[in-house]
Image (cartoon, rainbow, N blue to C red; front, side):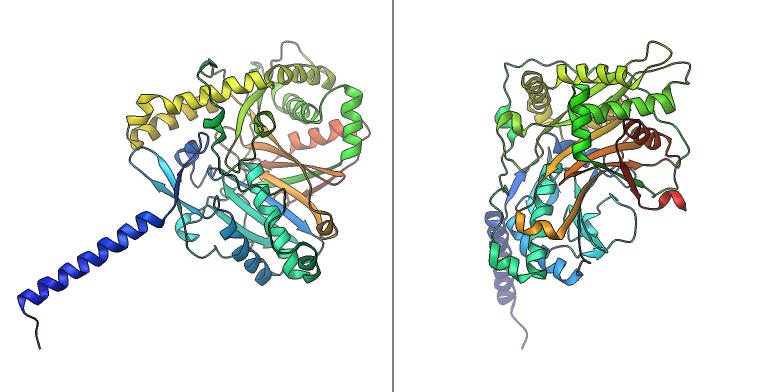
Length: 449
């Protein structure tokens, strides 16, 4: 029996009311949050070529079981609000929205690290989990969090996996998160911003670029240089510098010897060094919380020894990495986003401005060396975790980068490169072995193809 016009109208009203109710329920229940000050840049500059994706990975003493790894991810992800999100685009800013979809599928790694994360192929998540033989890989879009936040997640995923693979660990530790795992989502940039700290705009001094024949499109060369941590510490102590100064200076010296020394016009070598701000401001946030400083070396004579370069880099970083200077840089960065013009300009135009500024400032650095720090795992898990690594993807003008990660008595300096030749990497290793240090090298095989 066909409905009357009045009945059809009533049905339409009922459906409209149901849709309105579902929408209102969604508005009330779906969580969202703003991106932190640093994160706002990454959606603007990222794409298939420059991905803004980094990797942290744990190498176990046994083969990874993919089913157990997927189960571990399904258990851990709901506990991390900062990873259980998708990226949304508003009128004025990007923002994160609670995802709610099933966890992304774990897969066997079959290509190169740090590829662009297409959220429409990844259940809208901004991270991915893969495995290869004994290794668990977590790759993170930098807008989500920095290396400390990513390592936080990797450790808990590894713990949960090991509890599933070895039930006796569950009896020992239970299924709760470790006591040193933070879930804090504070925007520490805003909390520590002060108008009293007057910063100045970043000066742009064109830096030397690393040149050479590139790998095929889509390829990324990875080289892990494993060094004995006690030997490195002894050398740094002997030279009266920090471990970080030693490694950054080695990168500068290697680029100088293999790239810049023979050039007629010698622009400065500037190595960008991300500084974790948490220890300086007593923060435990899992959002991004770092600023960039640059170690600068300007060649003014024909030749330099490594010790001479080390002294220059050490003094430069010592001067720049102080709480006062870091607070000035932090406040200057935040002030640009808090400017009333930035608040009212639509996102499309804001993106164009940020992209232009990024391209302009990108000319100021030759490379980046980031130190994730010393990673510790709970005692019961140590027999199952052999090593932990980090990999930083390349960026505009910086097609060779280094990542430092220490675990146990081993320090891994990991090069990520788009170049076929490994002359800078070889020089880096030689500089240290000339001091009597032992080193072992592991690559992803791209250099042998």
